[in-house]
Image (cartoon, rainbow, N blue to C red; front, side, top):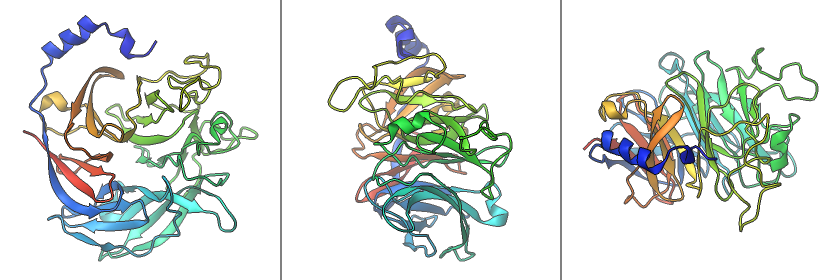
Length: 370
């Protein structure tokens, strides 16, 4: 039974009456002219950095002016779903000017690619990246244009989580520990492996692995509880909201609420199995979620604090989840008239929510309370 089915219709209706929605916020254009932007990160003086999937990193000024592409990026395999993807600033960016980014890394020779995580220093004049270092490279490399995952989260202890897709054709790999497909991994900022990772010392296991059984995780954030939350794409149905824990198995492709493209069960058609975790919430039909942020500030009123926001690529809206701990109480669809695929969702240092739209002429938007 899905999480939604546990709440009878009368209870959801009563909840909506006792928790009336505020007036819907509106989107304000900050910058346009971006080609399939994927991630936004905040630096200093109201400025932002935005990645473009074709392999460019752009500076956006406080007044929305779009700068020239920064120099210093490594080789990027920009094809299909791959390219330059997520970007975050170090928690001590004001002092060290360090960034972390992930991208589709081409094989040194021959065919194949995989998701890589790198660190770099943003030059003082913000024109280029310096001291670029690859911290992690997903293994094995495989010739695919799909399911790179590629969301980065810095944990409270300073380690880095990176989400990794199953590469589509390699979905069975998500259940084995000798590869990085369909996994969440955890590394130190120097690329080293934390000694308390769950599979350190296990024969045949990749020690970077934190959790397994994922399909294509395109949203990740630290929750109010200080723990990692993620969401991932199901196949045809079965998009999931999870809170990955060390060493746990989230089931793909053995269990899923989705089905194969075109119909028919995935594997044995199971949605539950002993030893595999259930999602906190699931979406059938799929909404194709991307980007994720918890509302921590007060810009949108107390009713929004603690809410989880995520974008829908498929239905082109912003979704707000009202939570009680790890339980989803209700959903609210926002910006339903936007008509653009929402790729990234972030809360800025000013307390406003910022969005990126994944379009040929993509936009950086600021969400304003009404």
